[in-house]
Length: 445
Image 1 (cartoon, helix red, strand yellow):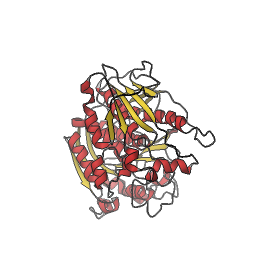
Image 2: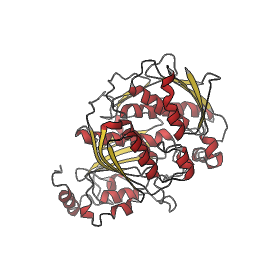
Image 3: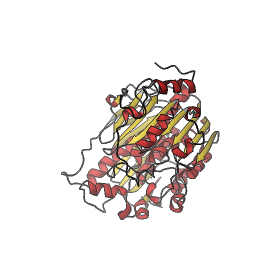
Image 4: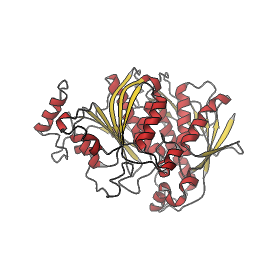
């Protein structure tokens, strides 16, 4: 059984306000009305991991405004389409019968003549390769595979629609099985145990949405507490990357915090979620003295280095940062304060426009791509680091960078050195003493 979903996102946002179209034009690529149709096929005996992958891939493809105009879903059994009704709340589309074969077909976990194979389970994500791993309920591999698969489809669609060789960026196909536990090709796939959080998520834009999708996919397996901090409001222009939002909330201009809190309450009933509709600067003043601000794990999903540095200055026990850049690049960075360079060392000074400083989801560079898979990926990896913290092992030491124009590369993993001009001053004895006083059980190496 197959159905077709015709995206209405471009129609809702409008060409004149579409960030992706504007970015392509700034690169010298001419506007076109050409759109492509993509098929997603799931095998009959698909496990929950592959179903999550397929559903997330469809979600990301429908948000590829304006390249993908239609997604054809082929899933055995009518009951498999129950999730489409829920998806319709978050992505505007029209459901129709299949009238023509899609131009490009993706097989989830099973090639069967498809143009692209995507697979994922546990900590593993495979492109053009199957993943030999047991589905243990870990959503990181399947969600990361969906993002990597959407990127491969984007490369094909971009080359299909924009044929100007002089202006098109270099986009290379990628294949392999990558571990999001070790950030290598070693097939490392440790089992996932209980996930108990004591965390704060600052920033609920595209990166924060990736974090929320992982936590939501954990369902009742995640416990503990999560604080959400963001002062921004939703708009329809967020819908191509803020995947937790309903279309209705975006059209109404609801707050990101309220919508994200509702999203998690519906999916992770054992997790205590508290929302704070305010900037981090306002949130931190709930605890007036910096020495009293004890945050176990903070995840930053901000495109604002000043805010990153301010979070780092408050010295959480662990700070996890997710970010995107202009060259279709992403980064996840985990800081253990005092052991190596912090965000004040690794993040370069960037000029922040006054109008962008008010919006945590606004890019520092107006030509930075605004794509669902691009912004979600570092959030998915950041959530993976949250899971690792709960397991007490396998944590990232430093940063991992990924450039979507190519493919995952373990050589882009590194530990930042301490800089004498660090904005935070992480090498100063006073800062180290503050860390010791906050977390006396921690021992710096």
